[in-house]
Image (cartoon, each protein chain N blue to C red):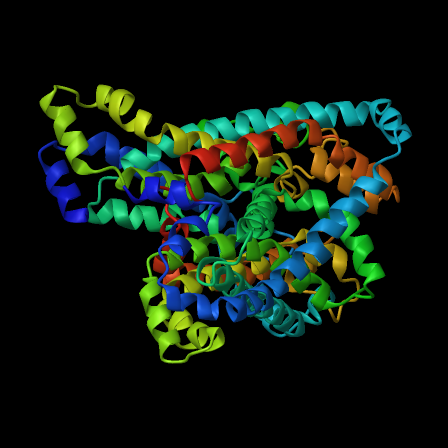
Length: 286
Length: 305
């Protein structure tokens, strides 16, 4: 595809100068808020807003404070980072497991009336999640999951699974059904077909869905904020917001924390971009 | 095109393949159904416990009609409603048009546009919390980065963004576009790349190039995708929370709230959860037709998301 595209394009010269101008503009536009985080994080405490557009001395003190938990909002920083990680990884694993099981039942075992489940998944996928949050918090009290990471995991899995089911269902159509059938002739049970054929062949789609769920949980904020109350159980996202809620908070520590918190998504993005993009396009906006 | 085949299969997975099954396959059918039900139960349980139950609970919480009298007598609610409509109407449409045009720019696959695309997509992967906070501190004082840049270029003091309601609302909308435009650019880029090259070659032979190629070839082919993406984005944006919560955080004086942040404050700061639910439910008259339209479009066209 890409070769035909480039050869098709080569005949029409790409007007260089406006394109480069647009490119530079996009680069500044994209990086400005990210640069601002670094700028504030590198300032001295109390000197965050001096009107500089370039840090006059590169003061890495705030990152040291975050690292050593040297400020009272940050006294559980590493524990909270562990909570964020635990919550996101649990969401990822559960989403991949539940999504792949459901998509296997719908697509391969041809569950009767399975379209109802697909439609429910589609409906949940469309739902603006913030609109559910108030009853959700009340329900978690009823379920006895107050101040528990598992309440957050339940929420994130709920909102990540529909997309997983839709994408996996779509991707599974590329795998010939004859494989399943010949395995069954050899006496394999559906569980064995799932484990030995479906999961290995679906690996790229499972990675895509896993990365999607991981980032969804890591980047989400509202449910984490409302479902967890004690500082020990909370996540870094909520800890960052504590700075925001207080008036005299040191913004350089806050932005340093925000940058550290943004690093895993950046790393995942640059490392697994292929899968993330594939996850969007493999379902096929065709 | 595989898209049309998917359209036929979507939502009706049983019909075509089961009819063609060889007779021996039926031997497994009984146990298959049992397995299928066992496999689908975890999802159905989650759906019932964490989607159906909250929805029913929410409808019950917001069912008292007096709540809506209370809402509409609150001038802040009316402002919120106007803000939400502005946020959605301007934010979604500007974002979609720009994303569509930029996806054409990124069709050029030279090394530097590829690199630029990789950087340009970064906001999509970043947590809304951190980037919106950063934008908030770019705007909140006149010594933030944006005003400093303004001062460096013009020599005069820049505006105080979060003191004027229109400027603060504009900041919310621009931040929203910053965060979500890359994602939709990628969607449109994928859709453009799925257009067979020979269509363009035929158009070129017929003399269509440049602007006319965009209007008469590319856009008609992508119109369905564009419509569905816009509808979906509208539904999501109606319930957008983090942008306004962090960028303007309602400033000045709760005059830039949208429905999600208004409901949030009513429920968790002022202790009126039912009123919060009612505020969010007041989006239903817009939300329900949109969702129905969207489901039908997806069913008819077979665009998969």
